[in-house]
Image (cartoon, rainbow, N blue to C red):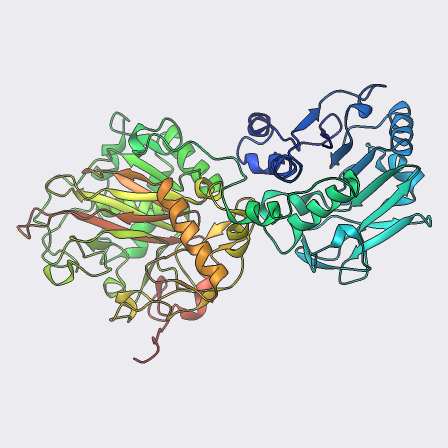
Length: 577
């Protein structure tokens, strides 16, 4: 049984220890975690892996059969380079993972590799997400047809014993191997190739498995189906804590309580502008009010705008309400009985702090401040006016080319029995639950979403909207568009990924019972939200929220802002309508 070791003495940050990864990359531990590689070696060979955390000594390298060096930064001393060369000559084996040019200048990685005829060049691979193909047959490439590389450096081979195996579309070598004495060396120019976001892509994991098998020796016993089992089942990442599930019970980032904050009520006394008659003047006034808020409140909002949080939601509790609340409207149109504008002010204050408030022509007649009340005719529809059904977790207007970056919900009146929990689930939380194949599949444009009921999908059909990926952007901290009620996968891999994403989102579900004066901000790009069913009485005292949509770049929708500066009119015609 071969033994494996991961060199963490020279690495920039990669570790096979989950607790250490959380220390090295507090906001996103996946960026420092390579424990899934150790898990695969255990599944393949029955061998546990050890971490080397100190400078190499005479006895360090002979204690293992295969050494993995990922993204070295700390300098290899002359003595360590000589120890490494001798160990390889005597039968040792190593996998060295480089990175982008300039990321490891002090490590003298090429000094370590020189005896084997392989060098890491200063040439960056041409683009991000490069698909690479085999150059020639080799045991490492058994079952490998293509590999996705995120970036990294091209390699150069200058000795006959050094063999290039994998190349990018521009002919740059990405993987090379060499035999030296009785030992073997494999070099890959991109350390991110086996990082969690790319572990389930194409044949990446199979390349790692084949490389280890070759390095461990042709006689090493391998569990052949270990790779596919690891790709399809379970999560190899760092799973984040799931308790407590109620937002108000979580310490720190998701909740800001302003019930005892001074001077907030003063903002209402200064309010003498009608937000419906003079919307732009009202928004300007609200933006100025924001700068008068206490520093602690502004700091929380700024931090959420810049970094979001694991939950994708920020709850502001206890904002001063309207002095007298009229009856809940019988429909979701503007209430003419509501003659004070505290709810509109707080929505505008927060909305202007986060971006630009907008509306959609098809939604509540293009109102900036939208009433959300239960109505009898929509009790069982996929609509904000429903009550008896669960509104499942979803991205707001997932189908829209100008979907909101933020969704703001202000509670004017809670429901009678406090049943209507508002649900949220953050993208960062659910990523750690996804099997590698599904995580990779969610980045492909293999999902067709559906158009909302209020935008013309009267039959509430699935899959009558645009084709798009569920995850996009930064592979370690992606944005998400997800609406399982109206979205469908275009192939079996996509359908499996949707099921896995739904299960992961439900596992990390958080909730809040919004009370009078509470304002919930949902980061619509980093969280999905929903609502629990509740009992509506239609007696004028039912649940009443106001909603606002916010985008960060108003100019992006300039072509479709025909009616007013903030009303977006994009026409949707569902098939068959």
